Image 1 (spheres, rainbow, N blue to C red):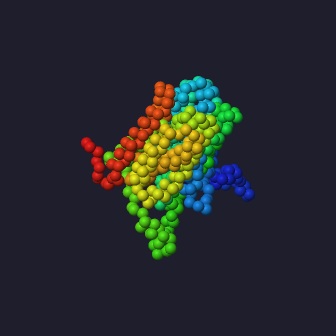
Image 2 (image 1 turned 90 degrees about the vertical axis):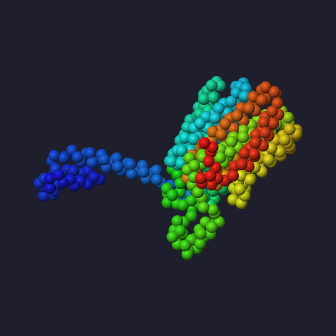
Image 3 (image 1 turned 90 degrees about the horizontal axis):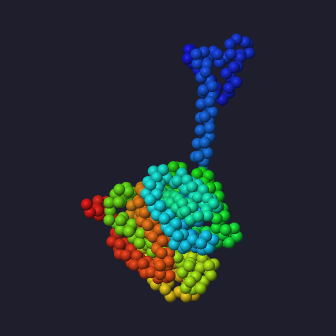
Length: 488
């Protein structure tokens, strides 16, 4: 038939095959002579399609796990948090001695670089939050490890303060929302419902625990090879992590045929089965979850009261944590190693977040936050009296337990109030408040010390900030649809 085309694309030799009895080649009988140039085009198309299918197969591949896949995703999130904390305030505060002893830069200068990076992350965060809701974590987290890795590697060439500023600010602005804050928390909320508070507790624990490990490893490496080379090693590790991040991380469990918490979707179709009865019992125990849009959440007073409270809490706690090492060196005559050990102990005790993940299922997170803030205020008063290594370690242990709770309970409260539908956007809009608190907390302590020669002014400011946060949280009751409109 004219125009008829029969070609076996995977066997190019058929294009010139001649029948055993002679005569025209078989393909000349099947291909319209006016279209003889179509075969090379179709062959090229088949190769392109094959390569595309192979790439798609690689991208869609995932390891099979004997446990819920969400736990593996959280494991990858933990690795991302580990490299990200190398440029976080908790680590920079602990290792700043290596930097200003080598360069001669002032404490306030290093604090200003760290604080500016945090403020920059606050500007980036709202956009990251919207991207997390729309596209998920699969490409955002690997992008973070790649950019962070390049920045950390670049520290090897830093010899002036402006170079340090540029790299530290870019690294912090990218790594905080992508690897520590918004995106990891969105992963936890998307993959878990019944175990959501536990998952959020774990993601909140990754940063301080990673920071505690990073401080010790960085100090040892910096003594041996210098702080620039140590950052270079961390940069290489961050870049290497990018590929496994792409292969393993997913946006939500539904994308790979799973349900949150690993629940069996078949149990919903068989209510009489044992699994169905178990699922029903779990649903009875849990209140129905509402999924608020970001716009609706932003039109409630409670959201903004929580936002201001977050700013105050973060500013107070960051100011203390960032300056605690030099304070203990001066007041308790501690060595640099001992003071860093206190900070490391404090951050590692964020393991207590697991307890808060359980408590928040029984007690309203808002009430828990208020109680912890009062406890933290008492610890700041205790700081004035510390004159021994033992007292410093007691403070570090208690501070770590309380500070870790504040970092995760706020996000448990937001998930409880507004659900998972727009969690990335809702928490992304909160990040500028958190970033402002982090930045000002890191900057303020150094400035107070440079002008007064003491950290007491910082302590008074932190006490006042904590007490104001308690007052605002007291007013931040759970909103209902159509209630708490902002004044017009």
